[in-house]
Image (cartoon, one colour):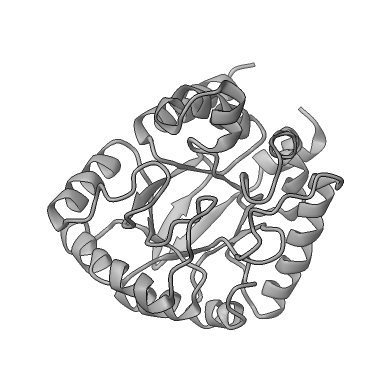
Length: 288
């Protein structure tokens, strides 16, 4: 184990989620909950209150630490929806979930500051912004006011160009510099609960995704939790020549590698398998 990895493993990482302490000394599972009709894997499955609550119960009972609620599909080719449409899709979900599961930690996947404010008022505990504050110029100042943990993800350019790939770049250096600049900006506003996400699958070639994964320990220098979101993405499906429905085994392999590179949070569709991966890697780590 190199010095960077050893330092990271001895850090005390935790998040204050609306008064609930989420201890990340053991990696956490962020379960994807899509309330959108066009997600690449599970779009439209949880559109009714009954189906949503049944799914949430399954996720929480099988090891999910965070529910990541998303109302906007960011798959390649998807049309971005307006803030008002996103709110129409998501506004009923949080009250329904928290009424049934009051201790659930809910993350909201949004790049609109208005959605961040409204969902925080409903009880959301984390804001997961794939745009890194580039889509809505008020997002960073909003997060400073909300004082909630913030997921800072790397995308190239803007949400309109986030799937445009540039092949002739050092992707690890590109992502590191991006995060370094954004983290400094966030900290200047008093925001300290920052989770960093390298942005697997967003505007990156297959080789670039794997380079990021192989060198993910480089981001330990930020001394912040690292989120890895590779579940059933093209870095699995294109390499194995399978569709997303048959990408679970490949996802499990990549999640294992991410944990060995010190990921603090796995963002997944499949919580049982993610929990098993974490249990086995923790067993592997604790022996000499």
